[in-house]
Length: 296
Ligand SMILES: [Zn+2]
Image 1 (tube, rainbow, N blue to C red):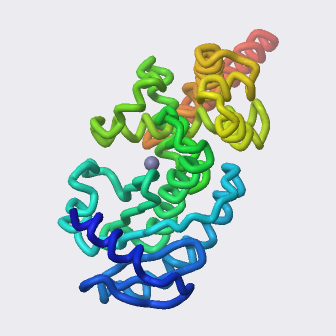
Image 2 (tube, rainbow, N blue to C red; image 1 turned 180 degrees about the vertical axis):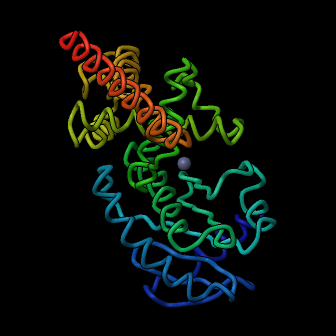
Image 3 (cartoon, rainbow, N blue to C red; image 1 turned 30 degrees about the vertical axis):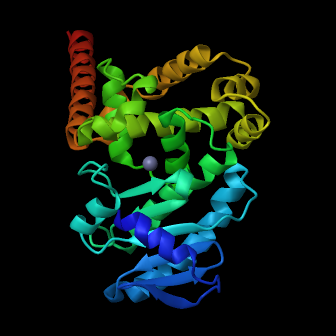
């Protein structure tokens, strides 16, 4: 309810870039590609968010093939209670931000993240909004939506890599089709689902061309469904593409990666040293035996 009241009031304000105005106790900073709504303690942050919003809007827009200029509204929720109120409690505990792509709305939690984290979350949520617009509002599988958002937010780390490698080795990958239900997942399951989504998009871009996402959005704007657009881009049926991705994961993420990327790094290094030591010792012993044999 609060979100809709603020949206309604802020949309009637004149659009003057870089200006500040207010809606009730909320203040508004206007920038070229949208508005940032905040409460007074966050003024400085709101100005920085507005700058990042403009920059990410243009970068992500080019990447996903969105050429429009409809404003995005970013809310800086000052507390978890206000975040829950703005998002109607739909975001699980592990969620850092939220986008309502159809309304061009983003809700962020500056109290839970430092400036770096906030920039990443903003880029992620802007991607959801612009990707939605780039495909004309047509439905997308969640793995593609999340993978593209992670790609543009540069959200990848050793933890993702380790989790993906371990799940692949243990045969516990979440089927990509089930990522649609990610909001009901535990934080660990969600982290794996996001890692898989990211890797599927990286696989798409690396195997079928860096413009694959743009080609898919273009085909969808021309009338294709996501599956049809993916098939035209890759030359594979949807199921065949998912099969190719699974083979790629099995080849790329093996036991060496689990040992080198995760918390087992030092155990892996110790095991490796022990192995090298044993091989060397065995070799030295054999040489000594051979020498003794020669002397005898
Ligand atoms: Zn997301």
